[in-house]
Length: 373
Image (cartoon, rainbow, N blue to C red; front, side, top):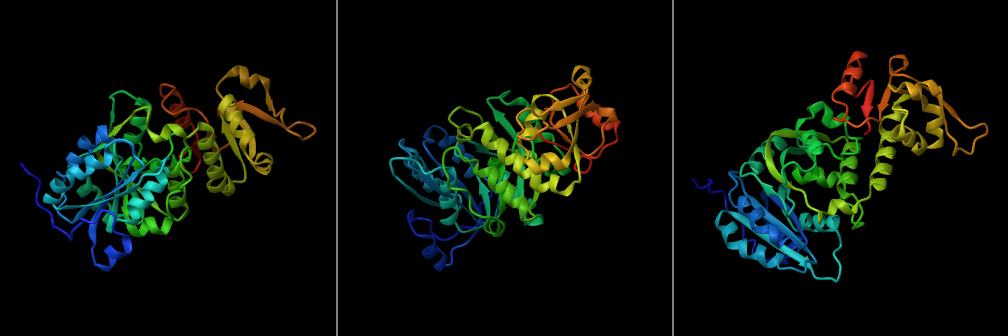
């Protein structure tokens, strides 16, 4: 059965037409699918097919920006133009052919600037959307105009990043807001984002620093700073591909760590008069060392743990400190510790023991504790 015909909107033929000219012509659509492309020809047919099969009945366009591809990515997209336009999806394609790509953030910004949809559906060129994606996320976005809307995903190859995929698909609506500090990054993952253009413009463009810059995490944090919401359509609407060429692999763990620590200090620690670090091991000590000197001194009351060997030591000495005497932080059993806590134990790695321990203290996530790892 063919998907329903949608309203056709003006043209879409001028691939290099500047945004202003198209706006003057009065062209506007309900949803722009925003797709940066760099050397993605091997995935594009699989990616573009379901875009042509969307069951969304409003007006829609595909806005592609080619970031210096050296393969035939642009030719492949052009080859889909007639089929997409026959389905009522107007197509805008542009790009550059410099010696080096300018990065994902730049390409996304350019694809957005040349588009004209009232809502933006972000699509990576190596992923595959469900035929229902645009419709269901559009409906959710109408109800949450100042939010980033996500969805559940199927990871490909199956079984890759198993813990991460489970986390994406199973955290609750409340945890979308409370677990924004973990090493997993955005709780609504970037390849699933859908939002209003008005909200995107209020937040800020993507960072254009290029390779090694986590432009999605930076935008995500800025959206939260602006008071933006987070929501997820609880259906699998995207096949989210994992491969070694993905841009995310260019971002170092230390870059992400620093951003997370800074955001934690800004959003949580500044609201507390003191807290306990749950985990006297490597990760807990690293968090302590990475806090600002003022926050270390003012806020960290103790470490807590379940490991009797660590507890028996009695305290952690911050040997790298320039203070004399060196700061000594007590280490206590978690049952003897005082909330609130920053939990530096990896999620989904203790067979449920961590969760049982937290529940035994009758703590509320987002009030009495936040997960950091």
